[in-house]
Length: 340
Image (cartoon, rainbow, N blue to C red; front, side):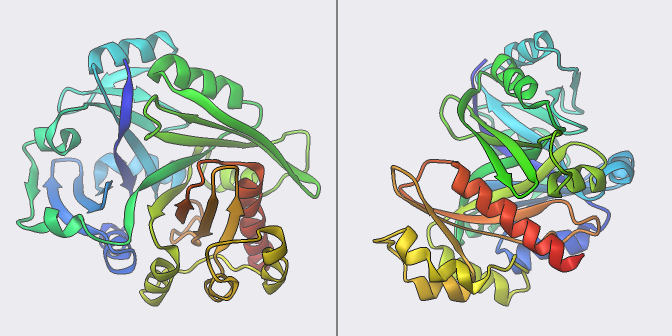
């Protein structure tokens, strides 16, 4: 029942044109295929190894009314879809069939996991007769600043992390990679990172500490109408030019105070990036035992201010330590307080 990778991520939206334009014009994705069915119409976008399906239509209305624009499906490729579906059902999931006859497993909140054969073309999308590839687009999609999907951050209700970490182990064979507890002022959050055996499908599970003051994760859960995907992290080999290009095209990133960079050289001696370049782009930096990590988070482009995105560059770093998680928490908290 081994899960290999994330085949694609599907985003439900009220405004497909604007959403597709954001990813194509602002973030450099390529439109590679289109699909029109009775209840929905979809666009397949790709950049490097990242596949995003943007969907709208009558079949998305219930999800959109409850959650607003957001991730509805994180498709997983696996050795044996039937066996994996059975394991998920035994772990307590509800399993149904997609229109293409593929198992669809309940995950967290209203987010599901379509199970795809690991060796299927286009990760199972081509099995749907309604998909029409755009000639020449696949080769263009292979280029761009974004190379892969680094991880998916999932916001859960307080006190449920252990339950979900166990579910992903029992259903999909994921293992726990790390766990952290981060306190910022009167607020605090728990996190557990789970990943597939190959390490290419990674979920960062986060939840507020219900014993502390409500904070940004509680706000996300309220705005999102429950549990859901908080952000997608896109891997890039060169974050500085990637940020410049995305910002010039209209992506709005979270701000970082200058004081952060005043102490960065002392905190991370030998950093292989000029501090002034980081200051100019507002990129955050961290380090673990394997190397450095650079990251920056966007503001949410959606009306409910829920789902957002991250650019991340790993210079050897493999971790998801407390400093990384704290950087995200503090960046979002600064933005929340400024906006509020």
